[in-house]
Length: 113
Length: 117
Image 1 (cartoon, each protein chain N blue to C red):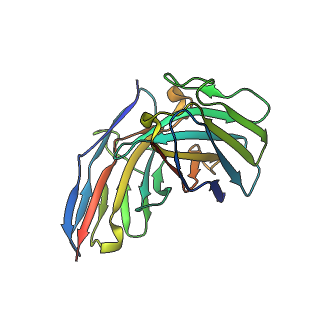
Image 2 (image 1 turned 60 degrees about the vertical axis):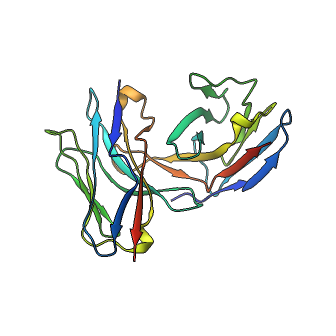
Image 3 (image 1 turned 90 degrees about the vertical axis):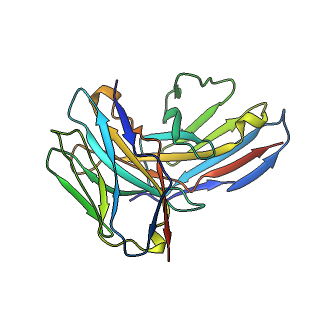
């Protein structure tokens, strides 16, 4: 079945550091891929998405490229801020899952000033 | 994008009691979902609620424990029945909006933080 694997957290960085959060997936079809973010005490927000191979999703300085050859969708940001501290979830959906979201375990990101 | 509100935002309940969580959307949506997020964990889908039909429950969740209502296209409730401390969790509702491409996005409410003593 479909699955999503994220790097374990917490990830602790200093402000202005470069961020990568790894996400790999297993799917039999051609899934759509998502990154959601959950700020402390809040619900989840869609951060970015990509629907086909080589698509790049971007938002708020974050980027992720859909790499079919490596089945990956790593989240990157060039210079993180304290306000980026949150939990980040990678997810996929496709026909095999009836388009329900399949979630990764989440990666907690802590940015220190 | 849809704006979703949930009530209550948090509650502390005694074991053996029941709590009903409300989810209100500012637009008409076909599909609504209820998730549970236990502390420090990812999301687990409880059920899918479509208006006009019975909710579809995921493995490990049953209607007697988590009855769901979906009376119209903008509202749903989830009841957590006969609660035990193991039910302490954040409960989230979400809705699906058809995207302009194949990726139907889900939008989430702020969640209900439940503590059972």
